[in-house]
Length: 215
Image (cartoon, rainbow, N blue to C red; front, side, top):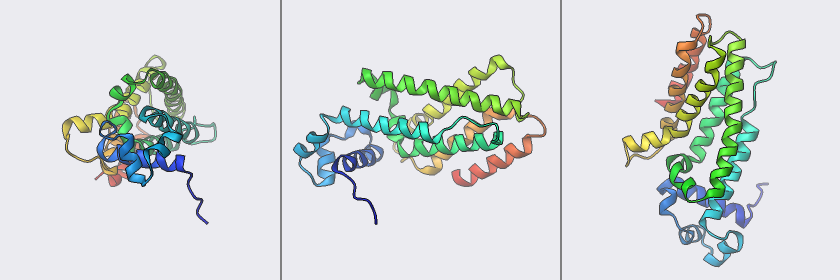
């Protein structure tokens, strides 16, 4: 039997849906209440304002990041760990793409959210770094230790601003799953210069897998 959603969860779900469809800036609490067929007063019983809703959505996003993106274990195959990271990150990017599309603006309006975001990103950087270290230890990539953190930052940069980039190139175009997965291919391209000869065929197969999702 399907579990019935609480009103608070319905508000969050509807907010994500509307933010993704038309952009967070264009949606008011009245829009969200009307979409759900509830009174604005009912919405305000659960959330003080729209910023409160956005903050709670970010907490849900951060919780999913924490549970879905795990550092590689000794038993895990390094490229499998990379694929798992890419799948999780880009799935969340699709689910919350309104946030990525307008990140600087959203953060500039909420200092507390800005601090929470920076804290979460420190953890993300640590996990990307751990994946790169595992790839190096498994002879998938050859890279200087001093360059690992910089490459991790570059990967994080592409992930964070891929949707913003798409929006600047085609402002009227809707973001879909295929365009999100094109970002995975951009991340994989960053690994190619570092790939060892024995790992190149496996990275190519990984590219082919994501090309099937992206085009």
